[in-house]
Amino acid sequence: MPFFSRTIRTRILPIAVVLVILAAMPVFGDARSEFHQTYKLVSGSSVSVKNTNGNIIITAWDNDYVDVYAELRSRRGEDELELVEISATQNGSLRVETILSRRQDDSFLSRLFGSIGRWPDVNVNYTLKLPRNIVVDEVATVNGGVDLRDTDGVTVARTTNGTVTVENHRGVLEARTTNGNINVKSTAKLREAHTVNGSIEVNIESGWNEPVSIETVNGSVDLNMPVGINADLSVRTVNGGIQANGMTMTIDKVSKHELAGSLGSGGPQISVKTVNGSVDLRQR
Image: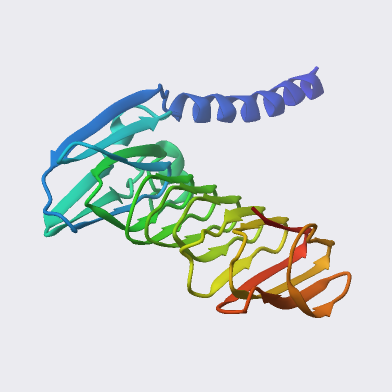
């Protein structure tokens, strides 16, 4: 009988500890808030957006003001949203930024195990609408996608974990991500499209006249170029083939994994590189 009692006590103790920990854990619920402001900018002014967790969508419209809308969402309750500020600074240009404050956690678990605080668990999704005479400078997020439509400017569009999609951009573009695809269509001057884990699909337009660098590590490349383009082309892959059906070019070097030569009379360099993926070249 005494042995039986000791066994029961040793089982009750860990169960009691678990119950205390569970009782100390907060109960969360979904929370949501919005930011919505408009701004007047003079023609030629620039807009930049910096985010951490969430998507950024920027489009052009026919109104004469900039419309900035942000939706904030958290799975950890209203208090979490208070740790996030949407900052919009207007000083000739407009800079929109998500500012995060670290929470100093004084819960039972933090006191028990020690904690230096944590960043808020909040997603911020931006939608901006710009007049057509306003240019886009830098658009950056970390965990989310970047989507630009009918925009202008010397623009850097970048993320770490997400897709970059650009269509009908009238200026110069650099598109970068680490874990995600890049899709660029109808962009006047593509300068760079770089990713690590993702595929790239880009169109080079007839107004193009400067070097282009297209690179990925784990992904394929689909490159469309206009008929009559004058460029020097260099294509390399390690584990993948190269398709250039219907291409008219002067070939300097060709193998299963490499293609180099001139399109038309030659011109600025178009460099395409991948490690684990194929390359598909087309003229349209």
